[in-house]
Image (cartoon, rainbow, N blue to C red):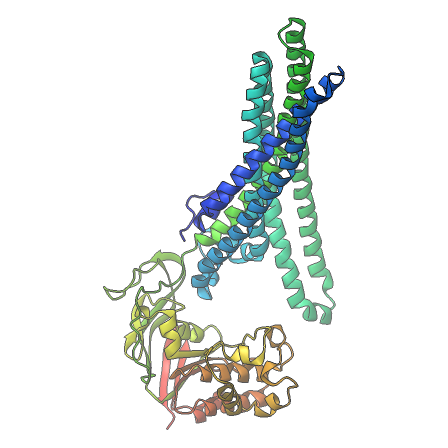
Length: 590
Protein backbone atom coordinates (compact mmCIF):
# COMPACT_ATOMS: atom_id res chain seq x y z
CA UNK A 1 0.00 0.00 0.00
CA UNK A 2 1.41 3.33 -1.05
CA UNK A 3 1.12 6.78 0.46
CA UNK A 4 -1.08 9.47 -1.13
CA UNK A 5 0.92 12.25 -2.77
CA UNK A 6 0.24 15.95 -2.88
CA UNK A 7 -1.10 18.39 -0.35
CA UNK A 8 -4.72 17.94 -1.44
CA UNK A 9 -5.94 14.39 -1.60
CA UNK A 10 -9.28 13.29 -3.01
CA UNK A 11 -11.33 10.40 -1.70
CA UNK A 12 -10.67 8.51 -4.93
CA UNK A 13 -6.89 9.01 -4.72
CA UNK A 14 -6.84 7.94 -1.07
CA UNK A 15 -8.87 4.80 -1.79
CA UNK A 16 -6.48 3.91 -4.61
CA UNK A 17 -3.59 4.30 -2.19
CA UNK A 18 -5.27 1.69 -0.02
CA UNK A 19 -5.66 -0.63 -3.01
CA UNK A 20 -7.91 -0.49 -6.10
CA UNK A 21 -11.33 -2.17 -6.02
CA UNK A 22 -11.86 -5.42 -7.87
CA UNK A 23 -12.48 -4.84 -11.59
CA UNK A 24 -15.23 -7.44 -11.57
CA UNK A 25 -17.17 -5.50 -8.91
CA UNK A 26 -16.68 -2.23 -10.79
CA UNK A 27 -17.79 -3.88 -14.01
CA UNK A 28 -20.90 -5.28 -12.34
CA UNK A 29 -21.78 -1.88 -10.85
CA UNK A 30 -21.18 -0.07 -14.15
CA UNK A 31 -23.14 -2.59 -16.20
CA UNK A 32 -26.08 -2.74 -13.78
CA UNK A 33 -26.11 1.06 -13.44
CA UNK A 34 -26.08 1.57 -17.20
CA UNK A 35 -28.94 -0.91 -17.66
CA UNK A 36 -30.89 0.75 -14.83
CA UNK A 37 -30.57 4.22 -16.38
CA UNK A 38 -31.45 2.82 -19.81
CA UNK A 39 -34.51 1.09 -18.37
CA UNK A 40 -35.63 4.35 -16.72
CA UNK A 41 -35.46 6.23 -19.99
CA UNK A 42 -37.02 3.34 -21.90
CA UNK A 43 -39.83 3.07 -19.36
CA UNK A 44 -40.82 6.74 -19.67
CA UNK A 45 -40.43 6.73 -23.43
CA UNK A 46 -42.54 3.61 -24.03
CA UNK A 47 -45.15 4.49 -21.40
CA UNK A 48 -45.49 7.97 -22.92
CA UNK A 49 -45.88 6.48 -26.39
CA UNK A 50 -48.36 3.90 -25.05
CA UNK A 51 -50.59 6.43 -23.28
CA UNK A 52 -50.60 8.84 -26.19
CA UNK A 53 -51.24 6.13 -28.75
CA UNK A 54 -53.92 4.55 -26.57
CA UNK A 55 -55.79 7.88 -26.51
CA UNK A 56 -56.33 7.38 -30.26
CA UNK A 57 -58.14 4.08 -29.55
CA UNK A 58 -56.20 1.83 -31.93
CA UNK A 59 -56.68 -1.96 -32.08
CA UNK A 60 -55.35 -3.49 -28.87
CA UNK A 61 -52.89 -5.60 -30.83
CA UNK A 62 -51.17 -2.40 -31.95
CA UNK A 63 -50.32 -1.74 -28.28
CA UNK A 64 -49.20 -5.25 -27.35
CA UNK A 65 -45.49 -4.66 -27.99
CA UNK A 66 -45.52 -1.36 -26.07
CA UNK A 67 -47.35 -2.98 -23.13
CA UNK A 68 -44.77 -5.74 -23.01
CA UNK A 69 -41.94 -3.22 -23.27
CA UNK A 70 -43.34 -1.17 -20.38
CA UNK A 71 -43.55 -4.28 -18.21
CA UNK A 72 -40.04 -5.36 -19.20
CA UNK A 73 -38.54 -1.92 -18.55
CA UNK A 74 -40.34 -1.61 -15.20
CA UNK A 75 -39.13 -5.02 -14.05
CA UNK A 76 -35.66 -4.46 -15.46
CA UNK A 77 -35.43 -1.06 -13.74
CA UNK A 78 -36.04 -2.60 -10.31
CA UNK A 79 -33.77 -5.60 -10.81
CA UNK A 80 -30.86 -3.67 -12.31
CA UNK A 81 -31.15 -0.90 -9.68
CA UNK A 82 -30.95 -3.56 -6.95
CA UNK A 83 -27.94 -5.18 -8.64
CA UNK A 84 -26.22 -1.79 -8.97
CA UNK A 85 -26.80 -0.89 -5.30
CA UNK A 86 -25.65 -4.33 -4.21
CA UNK A 87 -22.44 -4.00 -6.23
CA UNK A 88 -21.83 -0.43 -5.00
CA UNK A 89 -22.33 -1.47 -1.38
CA UNK A 90 -19.94 -4.35 -1.88
CA UNK A 91 -17.32 -1.99 -3.30
CA UNK A 92 -17.93 0.47 -0.44
CA UNK A 93 -17.54 -2.15 2.29
CA UNK A 94 -14.42 -3.57 0.66
CA UNK A 95 -13.00 -0.05 0.28
CA UNK A 96 -13.82 0.77 3.92
CA UNK A 97 -11.98 -2.35 5.03
CA UNK A 98 -8.94 -1.56 2.85
CA UNK A 99 -8.79 2.08 3.95
CA UNK A 100 -8.94 1.14 7.63
CA UNK A 101 -6.26 -1.51 7.18
CA UNK A 102 -4.15 1.04 5.30
CA UNK A 103 -4.65 3.52 8.13
CA UNK A 104 -3.65 0.93 10.70
CA UNK A 105 -0.52 0.14 8.71
CA UNK A 106 0.14 3.90 8.58
CA UNK A 107 -0.44 4.56 12.28
CA UNK A 108 1.29 1.47 13.68
CA UNK A 109 4.86 2.65 12.87
CA UNK A 110 4.07 6.03 14.47
CA UNK A 111 3.18 4.56 17.88
CA UNK A 112 4.11 5.56 20.48
CA UNK A 113 6.76 8.18 19.71
CA UNK A 114 5.91 9.22 16.15
CA UNK A 115 2.58 10.79 17.08
CA UNK A 116 4.08 12.39 20.17
CA UNK A 117 6.83 13.93 18.04
CA UNK A 118 4.28 15.19 15.54
CA UNK A 119 2.73 17.43 18.18
CA UNK A 120 5.94 19.42 18.35
CA UNK A 121 6.96 19.19 14.70
CA UNK A 122 7.44 22.24 12.53
CA UNK A 123 4.61 21.21 10.23
CA UNK A 124 1.23 22.47 11.38
CA UNK A 125 -0.50 19.69 9.46
CA UNK A 126 1.43 17.08 11.39
CA UNK A 127 0.42 18.76 14.63
CA UNK A 128 -3.24 18.55 13.66
CA UNK A 129 -2.88 14.94 12.57
CA UNK A 130 -1.57 13.93 15.98
CA UNK A 131 -4.80 14.93 17.70
CA UNK A 132 -8.02 15.78 15.88
CA UNK A 133 -7.27 13.63 12.84
CA UNK A 134 -7.11 10.49 14.95
CA UNK A 135 -10.36 11.44 16.69
CA UNK A 136 -12.10 11.46 13.30
CA UNK A 137 -10.61 8.10 12.31
CA UNK A 138 -13.89 6.22 12.02
CA UNK A 139 -16.03 9.08 10.69
CA UNK A 140 -13.42 10.17 8.13
CA UNK A 141 -13.06 6.70 6.63
CA UNK A 142 -16.83 6.41 6.40
CA UNK A 143 -17.05 9.82 4.70
CA UNK A 144 -14.46 8.69 2.16
CA UNK A 145 -16.30 5.48 1.28
CA UNK A 146 -19.70 7.20 1.19
CA UNK A 147 -18.31 9.82 -1.18
CA UNK A 148 -16.97 7.07 -3.42
CA UNK A 149 -20.31 5.27 -3.43
CA UNK A 150 -22.24 8.42 -4.33
CA UNK A 151 -19.72 9.48 -6.95
CA UNK A 152 -19.71 6.08 -8.61
CA UNK A 153 -23.51 5.88 -8.69
CA UNK A 154 -24.09 9.39 -10.05
CA UNK A 155 -21.29 9.04 -12.61
CA UNK A 156 -22.81 5.88 -14.04
CA UNK A 157 -26.44 7.04 -13.98
CA UNK A 158 -25.80 10.58 -15.20
CA UNK A 159 -23.35 9.50 -17.89
CA UNK A 160 -25.74 6.93 -19.37
CA UNK A 161 -28.68 9.34 -19.11
CA UNK A 162 -26.79 12.06 -21.01
CA UNK A 163 -25.64 9.69 -23.74
CA UNK A 164 -28.89 7.78 -24.18
CA UNK A 165 -31.27 10.69 -23.57
CA UNK A 166 -29.29 12.99 -25.84
CA UNK A 167 -29.15 10.33 -28.56
CA UNK A 168 -32.91 9.66 -28.46
CA UNK A 169 -33.73 13.38 -28.39
CA UNK A 170 -31.36 14.09 -31.28
CA UNK A 171 -32.96 11.33 -33.36
CA UNK A 172 -36.40 12.78 -32.76
CA UNK A 173 -35.33 16.42 -33.27
CA UNK A 174 -31.70 17.55 -33.57
CA UNK A 175 -32.45 21.03 -32.19
CA UNK A 176 -34.21 19.58 -29.13
CA UNK A 177 -31.31 17.15 -28.64
CA UNK A 178 -28.81 20.01 -28.64
CA UNK A 179 -30.94 21.98 -26.16
CA UNK A 180 -31.20 18.93 -23.90
CA UNK A 181 -27.43 18.50 -23.90
CA UNK A 182 -27.03 22.21 -23.16
CA UNK A 183 -29.47 21.89 -20.26
CA UNK A 184 -27.54 18.91 -18.87
CA UNK A 185 -24.31 20.90 -19.20
CA UNK A 186 -25.94 23.74 -17.28
CA UNK A 187 -27.05 21.38 -14.51
CA UNK A 188 -23.52 20.02 -14.21
CA UNK A 189 -21.97 23.49 -14.24
CA UNK A 190 -24.19 24.97 -11.52
CA UNK A 191 -23.83 21.80 -9.42
CA UNK A 192 -20.04 22.12 -9.56
CA UNK A 193 -20.35 25.82 -8.68
CA UNK A 194 -22.50 24.99 -5.66
CA UNK A 195 -20.07 22.29 -4.57
CA UNK A 196 -17.23 24.82 -4.70
CA UNK A 197 -19.24 27.16 -2.51
CA UNK A 198 -19.69 24.46 0.13
CA UNK A 199 -16.23 22.89 -0.17
CA UNK A 200 -14.52 25.08 2.41
CA UNK A 201 -17.47 24.63 4.75
CA UNK A 202 -17.16 20.85 4.39
CA UNK A 203 -13.50 21.00 5.41
CA UNK A 204 -14.28 23.18 8.41
CA UNK A 205 -17.16 20.94 9.45
CA UNK A 206 -14.92 17.85 9.39
CA UNK A 207 -12.20 19.58 11.41
CA UNK A 208 -14.64 20.95 13.99
CA UNK A 209 -16.33 17.57 14.28
CA UNK A 210 -12.99 15.97 15.14
CA UNK A 211 -12.24 18.78 17.59
CA UNK A 212 -15.61 18.22 19.23
CA UNK A 213 -14.80 14.52 19.56
CA UNK A 214 -11.50 15.48 21.22
CA UNK A 215 -13.37 17.70 23.66
CA UNK A 216 -15.78 14.90 24.54
CA UNK A 217 -12.91 12.49 25.20
CA UNK A 218 -11.16 15.09 27.33
CA UNK A 219 -14.39 15.70 29.22
CA UNK A 220 -14.78 12.04 30.07
CA UNK A 221 -11.16 11.77 31.20
CA UNK A 222 -11.15 14.95 33.26
CA UNK A 223 -14.67 14.70 34.70
CA UNK A 224 -13.62 13.58 38.23
CA UNK A 225 -11.15 16.47 38.62
CA UNK A 226 -13.58 19.03 37.21
CA UNK A 227 -16.37 17.86 39.49
CA UNK A 228 -14.07 17.74 42.52
CA UNK A 229 -13.03 21.38 42.00
CA UNK A 230 -16.45 22.54 40.85
CA UNK A 231 -15.14 23.75 37.47
CA UNK A 232 -17.45 21.97 35.08
CA UNK A 233 -17.98 25.37 33.48
CA UNK A 234 -14.50 25.22 31.92
CA UNK A 235 -15.14 22.21 29.73
CA UNK A 236 -18.81 23.16 29.20
CA UNK A 237 -17.77 26.48 27.67
CA UNK A 238 -15.29 24.80 25.33
CA UNK A 239 -17.85 22.20 24.27
CA UNK A 240 -20.46 24.89 23.64
CA UNK A 241 -18.00 26.90 21.56
CA UNK A 242 -17.10 23.83 19.47
CA UNK A 243 -20.79 23.00 19.08
CA UNK A 244 -21.60 26.52 17.86
CA UNK A 245 -18.81 26.46 15.33
CA UNK A 246 -19.86 22.98 14.15
CA UNK A 247 -23.44 24.22 13.73
CA UNK A 248 -22.26 27.26 11.77
CA UNK A 249 -20.12 25.11 9.47
CA UNK A 250 -23.02 22.68 8.96
CA UNK A 251 -25.38 25.54 8.11
CA UNK A 252 -22.90 26.93 5.59
CA UNK A 253 -22.52 23.49 4.06
CA UNK A 254 -26.31 23.10 3.89
CA UNK A 255 -26.59 26.58 2.33
CA UNK A 256 -24.13 25.60 -0.39
CA UNK A 257 -26.05 22.38 -0.99
CA UNK A 258 -29.35 24.27 -1.15
CA UNK A 259 -27.99 26.87 -3.57
CA UNK A 260 -26.60 24.12 -5.80
CA UNK A 261 -29.89 22.21 -5.72
CA UNK A 262 -31.89 25.34 -6.57
CA UNK A 263 -29.58 26.33 -9.42
CA UNK A 264 -29.61 22.78 -10.78
CA UNK A 265 -33.41 22.71 -10.66
CA UNK A 266 -33.61 26.03 -12.51
CA UNK A 267 -31.10 24.85 -15.11
CA UNK A 268 -33.02 21.61 -15.61
CA UNK A 269 -36.30 23.51 -15.87
CA UNK A 270 -34.82 25.90 -18.42
CA UNK A 271 -33.48 22.99 -20.44
CA UNK A 272 -36.86 21.22 -20.35
CA UNK A 273 -38.69 24.38 -21.45
CA UNK A 274 -36.24 24.73 -24.32
CA UNK A 275 -36.81 21.11 -25.37
CA UNK A 276 -40.61 21.60 -25.24
CA UNK A 277 -40.43 24.77 -27.31
CA UNK A 278 -38.15 23.14 -29.88
CA UNK A 279 -40.41 20.09 -30.01
CA UNK A 280 -43.51 22.24 -30.51
CA UNK A 281 -41.78 24.11 -33.33
CA UNK A 282 -40.88 20.81 -34.99
CA UNK A 283 -44.46 19.58 -34.50
CA UNK A 284 -45.93 22.70 -36.12
CA UNK A 285 -43.52 22.28 -39.00
CA UNK A 286 -44.78 18.73 -39.47
CA UNK A 287 -41.38 17.25 -38.61
CA UNK A 288 -42.51 15.59 -35.35
CA UNK A 289 -45.76 13.81 -34.57
CA UNK A 290 -47.70 14.44 -31.39
CA UNK A 291 -46.88 10.99 -30.08
CA UNK A 292 -43.15 11.50 -30.67
CA UNK A 293 -43.37 14.95 -29.05
CA UNK A 294 -44.64 13.24 -25.89
CA UNK A 295 -41.79 10.73 -26.08
CA UNK A 296 -39.26 13.56 -26.54
CA UNK A 297 -40.53 15.46 -23.49
CA UNK A 298 -40.60 12.38 -21.23
CA UNK A 299 -37.13 11.25 -22.31
CA UNK A 300 -35.85 14.75 -21.54
CA UNK A 301 -37.54 14.64 -18.11
CA UNK A 302 -35.88 11.28 -17.36
CA UNK A 303 -32.44 12.54 -18.40
CA UNK A 304 -32.70 15.86 -16.56
CA UNK A 305 -34.06 14.13 -13.45
CA UNK A 306 -30.73 12.34 -13.01
CA UNK A 307 -29.06 15.73 -12.81
CA UNK A 308 -31.08 16.60 -9.69
CA UNK A 309 -28.99 14.07 -7.76
CA UNK A 310 -25.71 15.69 -8.76
CA UNK A 311 -25.57 18.54 -6.17
CA UNK A 312 -25.95 16.15 -3.23
CA UNK A 313 -23.35 13.81 -4.73
CA UNK A 314 -20.84 16.64 -5.26
CA UNK A 315 -21.44 17.96 -1.74
CA UNK A 316 -20.83 14.47 -0.37
CA UNK A 317 -17.72 14.28 -2.50
CA UNK A 318 -16.47 17.55 -1.00
CA UNK A 319 -16.99 16.10 2.48
CA UNK A 320 -15.20 12.92 1.46
CA UNK A 321 -12.30 14.87 -0.05
CA UNK A 322 -11.97 16.92 3.15
CA UNK A 323 -11.86 13.69 5.16
CA UNK A 324 -9.34 12.20 2.73
CA UNK A 325 -7.07 15.24 3.07
CA UNK A 326 -7.16 14.93 6.85
CA UNK A 327 -6.26 11.25 6.68
CA UNK A 328 -3.51 11.98 4.17
CA UNK A 329 -1.95 14.37 6.69
CA UNK A 330 -1.52 11.40 9.01
CA UNK A 331 -0.08 9.30 6.20
CA UNK A 332 2.52 11.97 5.45
CA UNK A 333 4.00 11.75 8.96
CA UNK A 334 7.34 10.01 8.90
CA UNK A 335 7.74 7.18 11.41
CA UNK A 336 10.46 7.77 14.01
CA UNK A 337 12.13 4.47 13.09
CA UNK A 338 12.30 2.14 10.09
CA UNK A 339 11.91 -1.59 10.42
CA UNK A 340 14.49 -3.66 8.53
CA UNK A 341 13.37 -5.95 5.74
CA UNK A 342 15.02 -9.00 7.30
CA UNK A 343 15.40 -9.91 10.96
CA UNK A 344 18.86 -10.30 12.47
CA UNK A 345 17.77 -11.05 16.03
CA UNK A 346 20.19 -13.08 18.17
CA UNK A 347 19.30 -16.57 19.40
CA UNK A 348 17.16 -16.51 22.54
CA UNK A 349 19.00 -17.00 25.78
CA UNK A 350 21.34 -13.99 25.65
CA UNK A 351 19.15 -11.47 27.37
CA UNK A 352 21.75 -8.70 27.78
CA UNK A 353 21.23 -5.09 26.70
CA UNK A 354 23.60 -2.23 25.97
CA UNK A 355 23.29 1.50 25.31
CA UNK A 356 26.59 2.82 23.98
CA UNK A 357 26.97 6.63 23.95
CA UNK A 358 23.39 7.05 22.74
CA UNK A 359 22.10 10.42 21.67
CA UNK A 360 18.43 10.92 20.89
CA UNK A 361 17.20 14.16 19.40
CA UNK A 362 13.99 15.85 20.44
CA UNK A 363 11.35 16.97 17.95
CA UNK A 364 12.53 19.79 15.71
CA UNK A 365 14.48 20.12 12.50
CA UNK A 366 15.62 16.88 10.88
CA UNK A 367 18.98 15.25 10.80
CA UNK A 368 19.94 11.81 9.56
CA UNK A 369 20.91 9.25 12.15
CA UNK A 370 24.13 7.31 11.92
CA UNK A 371 23.54 3.59 11.48
CA UNK A 372 25.18 0.48 10.05
CA UNK A 373 25.73 0.64 6.31
CA UNK A 374 23.62 -2.48 5.72
CA UNK A 375 20.65 -1.28 7.79
CA UNK A 376 17.46 0.20 6.40
CA UNK A 377 17.76 3.98 5.71
CA UNK A 378 16.36 6.05 8.53
CA UNK A 379 13.89 8.89 8.51
CA UNK A 380 15.02 12.42 9.41
CA UNK A 381 15.82 12.80 13.09
CA UNK A 382 15.28 16.10 14.97
CA UNK A 383 18.24 17.91 16.54
CA UNK A 384 17.54 18.93 20.17
CA UNK A 385 18.84 16.11 22.43
CA UNK A 386 16.59 14.12 24.75
CA UNK A 387 19.47 11.77 25.60
CA UNK A 388 23.10 12.79 25.32
CA UNK A 389 25.95 10.26 25.49
CA UNK A 390 23.97 7.76 27.58
CA UNK A 391 25.77 4.48 28.21
CA UNK A 392 24.57 1.62 30.36
CA UNK A 393 24.84 -2.14 30.29
CA UNK A 394 22.52 -4.87 31.52
CA UNK A 395 24.50 -8.11 31.62
CA UNK A 396 22.60 -11.42 31.28
CA UNK A 397 20.87 -12.26 34.55
CA UNK A 398 21.55 -8.87 36.14
CA UNK A 399 19.13 -6.18 37.28
CA UNK A 400 19.72 -2.49 36.68
CA UNK A 401 17.58 0.38 37.96
CA UNK A 402 17.35 3.63 36.03
CA UNK A 403 16.54 6.51 38.38
CA UNK A 404 15.98 10.22 37.85
CA UNK A 405 13.39 12.92 38.13
CA UNK A 406 10.53 13.31 35.66
CA UNK A 407 11.76 14.36 32.24
CA UNK A 408 15.28 13.06 32.82
CA UNK A 409 15.02 10.70 29.81
CA UNK A 410 14.44 7.38 31.57
CA UNK A 411 11.50 6.23 29.43
CA UNK A 412 13.27 7.49 26.31
CA UNK A 413 16.20 5.18 27.11
CA UNK A 414 13.80 2.23 27.23
CA UNK A 415 12.18 3.36 23.98
CA UNK A 416 15.58 3.32 22.28
CA UNK A 417 16.10 -0.28 23.39
CA UNK A 418 12.59 -1.13 22.16
CA UNK A 419 13.38 0.73 18.91
CA UNK A 420 10.44 3.07 19.36
CA UNK A 421 12.97 5.90 19.07
CA UNK A 422 15.98 6.15 16.76
CA UNK A 423 19.42 6.91 18.18
CA UNK A 424 20.95 9.79 16.23
CA UNK A 425 24.39 8.61 17.34
CA UNK A 426 25.70 5.69 19.34
CA UNK A 427 24.00 2.32 19.33
CA UNK A 428 21.52 0.19 21.25
CA UNK A 429 22.09 -3.55 21.33
CA UNK A 430 20.22 -6.57 22.62
CA UNK A 431 22.10 -9.83 22.78
CA UNK A 432 24.94 -8.12 20.94
CA UNK A 433 22.78 -7.18 17.92
CA UNK A 434 21.88 -3.60 16.99
CA UNK A 435 18.15 -3.09 17.58
CA UNK A 436 17.92 -1.36 14.18
CA UNK A 437 18.55 -4.74 12.58
CA UNK A 438 15.70 -6.45 14.43
CA UNK A 439 12.11 -6.63 13.22
CA UNK A 440 9.17 -6.19 15.58
CA UNK A 441 8.61 -9.94 15.63
CA UNK A 442 12.24 -10.58 16.42
CA UNK A 443 12.23 -7.88 19.09
CA UNK A 444 9.20 -9.45 20.77
CA UNK A 445 11.10 -12.74 21.18
CA UNK A 446 13.92 -10.95 22.96
CA UNK A 447 12.25 -8.25 25.05
CA UNK A 448 9.12 -7.98 27.20
CA UNK A 449 7.92 -4.50 28.14
CA UNK A 450 5.79 -3.55 31.13
CA UNK A 451 4.56 0.01 30.62
CA UNK A 452 3.75 2.57 33.26
CA UNK A 453 0.08 1.70 32.90
CA UNK A 454 -0.83 -1.75 31.60
CA UNK A 455 -3.55 -1.74 28.96
CA UNK A 456 -6.08 -4.54 29.27
CA UNK A 457 -8.53 -5.29 26.50
CA UNK A 458 -12.25 -5.93 26.86
CA UNK A 459 -11.60 -9.66 26.52
CA UNK A 460 -11.13 -12.71 28.71
CA UNK A 461 -8.28 -13.11 31.16
CA UNK A 462 -6.83 -15.81 28.91
CA UNK A 463 -7.00 -13.62 25.81
CA UNK A 464 -5.29 -10.74 27.60
CA UNK A 465 -2.46 -13.03 28.68
CA UNK A 466 -2.14 -14.79 25.34
CA UNK A 467 -1.40 -11.45 23.71
CA UNK A 468 2.22 -12.30 24.56
CA UNK A 469 2.07 -15.92 23.36
CA UNK A 470 -1.12 -17.05 21.58
CA UNK A 471 -0.29 -20.77 21.77
CA UNK A 472 0.18 -20.83 25.57
CA UNK A 473 -1.69 -23.61 27.37
CA UNK A 474 -4.02 -22.84 30.28
CA UNK A 475 -1.70 -24.40 32.86
CA UNK A 476 1.03 -21.98 31.70
CA UNK A 477 -1.36 -19.10 32.20
CA UNK A 478 -2.14 -20.26 35.72
CA UNK A 479 1.57 -20.65 36.48
CA UNK A 480 2.44 -17.06 35.54
CA UNK A 481 -0.52 -15.73 37.51
CA UNK A 482 0.76 -17.61 40.55
CA UNK A 483 4.23 -16.16 39.96
CA UNK A 484 2.98 -12.59 40.14
CA UNK A 485 0.72 -13.14 43.13
CA UNK A 486 -2.60 -13.30 41.30
CA UNK A 487 -3.34 -16.95 41.97
CA UNK A 488 -5.90 -16.25 44.69
CA UNK A 489 -7.52 -13.53 42.59
CA UNK A 490 -7.77 -15.82 39.56
CA UNK A 491 -9.33 -18.67 41.55
CA UNK A 492 -11.98 -16.31 42.90
CA UNK A 493 -13.19 -15.40 39.40
CA UNK A 494 -16.56 -16.98 38.56
CA UNK A 495 -15.53 -17.77 34.99
CA UNK A 496 -11.86 -18.55 35.60
CA UNK A 497 -9.75 -17.83 32.53
CA UNK A 498 -12.95 -17.15 30.60
CA UNK A 499 -13.88 -14.16 32.76
CA UNK A 500 -14.22 -11.04 30.60
CA UNK A 501 -12.33 -8.01 31.87
CA UNK A 502 -13.74 -4.52 31.36
CA UNK A 503 -12.16 -2.26 28.76
CA UNK A 504 -8.88 -0.93 30.12
CA UNK A 505 -9.14 -3.26 33.12
CA UNK A 506 -11.50 -0.86 34.88
CA UNK A 507 -12.74 -3.65 37.18
CA UNK A 508 -9.21 -4.25 38.53
CA UNK A 509 -7.12 -2.20 40.92
CA UNK A 510 -3.97 -0.49 39.66
CA UNK A 511 -1.80 -3.11 41.38
CA UNK A 512 -3.77 -5.98 39.87
CA UNK A 513 -3.45 -4.47 36.39
CA UNK A 514 0.31 -4.16 36.75
CA UNK A 515 0.62 -7.72 38.06
CA UNK A 516 -1.45 -8.95 35.11
CA UNK A 517 0.83 -6.98 32.79
CA UNK A 518 3.86 -8.60 34.43
CA UNK A 519 2.27 -12.04 33.99
CA UNK A 520 1.88 -11.26 30.30
CA UNK A 521 5.53 -10.21 30.09
CA UNK A 522 6.69 -13.41 31.81
CA UNK A 523 4.51 -15.55 29.54
CA UNK A 524 6.27 -14.14 26.49
CA UNK A 525 9.41 -16.08 27.41
CA UNK A 526 11.68 -13.10 26.69
CA UNK A 527 15.00 -13.04 28.53
CA UNK A 528 15.06 -9.25 28.95
CA UNK A 529 12.38 -7.38 30.90
CA UNK A 530 11.98 -3.61 30.58
CA UNK A 531 9.84 -2.20 33.39
CA UNK A 532 8.81 1.43 32.89
CA UNK A 533 7.60 2.94 36.18
CA UNK A 534 5.51 -0.17 36.94
CA UNK A 535 4.30 1.25 40.29
CA UNK A 536 3.83 4.90 39.32
CA UNK A 537 0.11 4.97 40.19
CA UNK A 538 0.31 3.16 43.54
CA UNK A 539 0.63 4.49 47.06
CA UNK A 540 4.11 4.24 48.67
CA UNK A 541 3.41 1.09 50.71
CA UNK A 542 1.75 -0.76 47.82
CA UNK A 543 4.39 0.52 45.42
CA UNK A 544 7.28 -1.00 47.37
CA UNK A 545 5.42 -4.29 47.82
CA UNK A 546 4.34 -4.62 44.20
CA UNK A 547 7.79 -3.66 42.88
CA UNK A 548 9.42 -6.29 45.09
CA UNK A 549 6.93 -8.91 43.88
CA UNK A 550 7.44 -8.00 40.24
CA UNK A 551 11.22 -8.18 40.50
CA UNK A 552 10.96 -11.42 42.42
CA UNK A 553 8.77 -12.91 39.69
CA UNK A 554 11.39 -12.00 37.07
CA UNK A 555 13.58 -14.83 38.32
CA UNK A 556 16.88 -15.13 36.47
CA UNK A 557 15.88 -12.81 33.62
CA UNK A 558 17.78 -9.63 32.87
CA UNK A 559 15.85 -6.61 34.10
CA UNK A 560 16.07 -2.88 33.41
CA UNK A 561 13.60 -1.07 35.64
CA UNK A 562 12.73 2.63 35.56
CA UNK A 563 11.59 3.82 38.96
CA UNK A 564 11.31 6.72 41.36
CA UNK A 565 11.52 4.34 44.31
CA UNK A 566 14.77 4.81 46.21
CA UNK A 567 14.07 1.51 47.98
CA UNK A 568 14.72 -0.31 44.71
CA UNK A 569 18.43 -0.21 45.55
CA UNK A 570 18.16 -3.34 47.66
CA UNK A 571 16.60 -5.32 44.83
CA UNK A 572 18.94 -4.55 41.91
CA UNK A 573 22.61 -5.02 41.13
CA UNK A 574 23.30 -1.53 39.79
CA UNK A 575 21.73 1.93 39.88
CA UNK A 576 22.16 4.39 37.02
CA UNK A 577 20.94 7.96 37.58
CA UNK A 578 19.91 10.24 34.72
CA UNK A 579 19.51 14.00 34.79
CA UNK A 580 18.63 16.15 31.77
CA UNK A 581 19.31 13.24 29.42
CA UNK A 582 22.81 12.48 30.80
CA UNK A 583 24.15 9.79 33.09
CA UNK A 584 25.25 11.59 36.26
CA UNK A 585 26.09 8.55 38.36
CA UNK A 586 26.38 4.79 38.21
CA UNK A 587 27.05 2.57 41.19
CA UNK A 588 26.96 -1.08 42.09
CA UNK A 589 24.68 -2.02 44.99
CA UNK A 590 26.40 -5.26 45.92
